[in-house]
Each structure stands twice: as structure tokens, then as C-alpha cells.
Image (cartoon, rainbow, N blue to C red; front, side, top):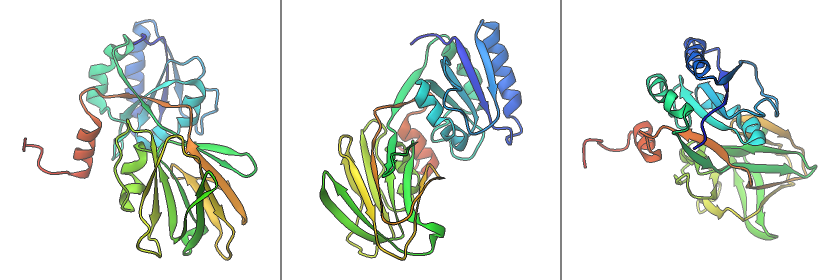
Length: 277
């Protein structure tokens, strides 16, 4: 891998240790002649990571999700240091980050390319999601009716609390809680999972990377809302349609080489006894 020349530290100031850690790591980088920059305000401008080799996010998974659009626009690699609760995406803790930092700066790092959802409404507005896109009735007031098509073929009509469209990365988030499958992040696919469907036969559907998905809504009295990675995105009023597919852009995530994806899943989800071989 190529050695790092420029770093932007994205710092969640609500975490007490975040600035101290950023300053310590920045001093290490500056001693090696690497340009550093601190970012503490959100949301990030699309071009704020231009000409940045590495974005070091200090906070947690939520903070890391906040750099998605900027990182995609500049194709910047992202390293997450977890000061939060989960750590599915920010896989380095404070100690492992300090231990690995010099090696990473010298170009010894492992990058995983993660799939990203691209969502576009009928007016041409678009947005991205690294974890998931969720369609629900505004205010969670009740059931919503949605029609899903692909290449003009009807997949199904849903009467449910909502629909989740998840990447493999996001398959362990809301999708999992709703009974959806866990997908290896190396698989290029989209999982569609209904939330509390009125018809019990409605289950998750896995779409391949090249399948375009279209969702239609035209039935009163529901009023839909779209959230991407937990944040409200488009304002929608019936009738509407949205298109969902995997983006050609991939999120460049630096992973802790000491932790595989499924070792993290086992740890976070308390799967079995780790002492059993």
C-alpha cells in the first residue's frame, strides 16, 4: 500500500478523550512529515477530504457514518477509532490504534471496499447509505403499503411497518433486528427485509449487485419517510417512486488486521463460547 502523506482527523467532541487522542496521533504523523488537519464540525462538505489520503475518525460508528459522502467524493480511505458502544465499523480501540498507527502511516494497512447504497427519488435527488435505507410511515403511525419492482417486474406488494434495504455492512444492524440475514461484507448484494409484515409469508429477499430496485407508494392515508443510515433524507408525498441500487463507488475502510469481520460479529452479538474450537 501507498504511505500516507495527508490526514484529516474527524473528531467527535462529545467523547471526552477524542481531542486528546487526535492530538497525540497528529504529533506522531507530523513528526514523520505528514500534513494533518482537524475537523470538528458537521456535516462535512463534499470537498473537505479532497487531496486527503486518510480520514481518521475518532468517535464511533455514528461519527464514521457521517463522513461517508465526503469520503466517497474524494475516494479517501477511512480509519475508525471506537470510543462508542458498537465498533462494527470503527474496529480500532485506543490501544490498537496507537499500536498500529506508525505502521499504517508507512503504508502497512488492510483496506476493505464496502458496498454503498445509491438512492434516487423521482425528482433526481440522490443520497448514499453505508448501512441501510429504511422506508416507514412518518411518525411511525402505522402500516404502510409499498410496491417493489425490478426491471418492470413486480417483486411483491407489502403491507407492513416498513421496509429495510441493507448492504452487507448494514446487515448486522436494523436488518438483523427485523429478522433479516447476516451477509459477508465481501458479497455484493442488497437485502430487502419487511418490518412486521401483515402477511407472514413475506420474508427477506437478496438482490444481486446489478439488480435495480424500484419502490412505489400511492395509497392513502400513509405518508412515507426515507432515512439513510438513521438520518432523514428525502421529503416524500404520494404518489412517489424511488430507485435503489449499489453505487459504483465503494467505501474504503481500513480494518484492524487483528480482527476479522466475523470475529467482530461473534464478539458484538455474543455468539457461542470463544474457547470452543
